[in-house]
Image 1: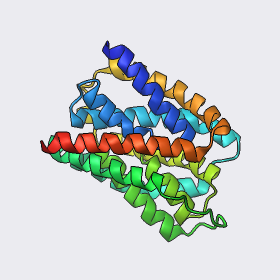
Image 2: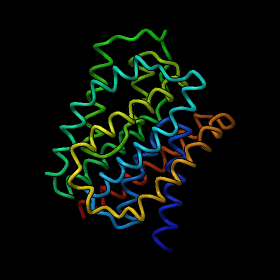
Image 3: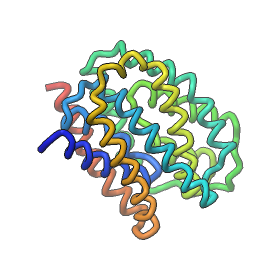
Length: 247
């Protein structure tokens, strides 16, 4: 199968998950780029940030029109993550490929387990700045080092820590992901020169279209069911990556 077709299929699946779940899809971008499209781990994490930033930014307006983006909360959350995201982007270039792969597999496994656990009950929506800053800083660091948008961590944090309702958390997470991804990319400018844009371009295009379909899918299918299916797939990918890195 040609690289173009693989990029289109992978992008569509990742965009679908991002649009339906408000995150999580980006965590599959890195393994797809490594194992399907022969990117190195460093190149894959950089390319993933490009894919995630563009896809999240284009999906954000639709959620905003529906009133599901808490701008003040999202900007506070994202602002706290900018510094750690920039620092993480600088650190990522100094890590070996095996360490980067193992770290990514561990985070993916944690994300899968969180998705399989019963969800938190949304609170009153009252936002505590200290909690927002702490959670946002941790998310930014993960985004910078591993090249993932962090929506799989942002949505639970926005619901469980900050008390947003699920639909608001999904929409707001896209704002957070967009800001953190761009910040992390600022420190990876030197690694972008060798990227295969003929593959990344179609990947991004398919992800954007998939995100629109994902939003419509979320309105028709149980979010819990979608999340459980995605979590099982993600857990399998994490196990494969960890075995591949240590064997």
